[in-house]
Image 1: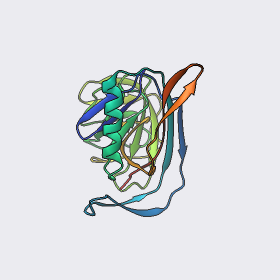
Image 2: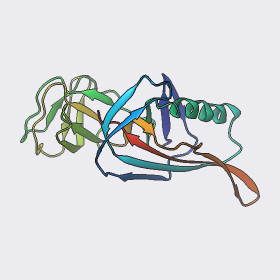
Image 3: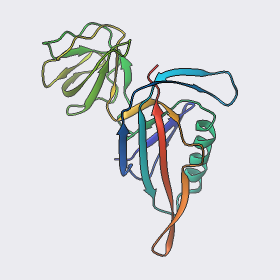
Length: 198
């Protein structure tokens, strides 16, 4: 398993998995604006921090892509962060999934497998539920291991639990640092971001 960062149509698969994936789920309403002064995002504030030591020497293109991603992120643009680069579902329900049932109809089931954790969220972000996938009917639905505790409607959202598709950087300094480990230098990625839930 390797982690990934996805931005502007690009995917960077890291050579290692994030060693830390830490949420701080303090909620508040805040405003963010990109450096170009045009895009304003209103959202609830969920802080996350990821950390990974990228053993060097990295392939030059991987290092270049990390800096290119950071140039994108520091402008206030959205990007995705995935604990497992193979689990990046971000879709909607295409029908109702009522409490007391296990079947969740989805617009896409790409990359979903039994045992995956999925996050269901109402379109108005009023509430959410985490489910464990028991089985998948490709392109149609997933079946949870347990009955849903809450009801969801068409156009509510579903994503892999450890995939945050709308991250916004809160770091203002580069999260990439050269550090020493024994006799070799390694590249450390230590990054804090918010999940934009607007």
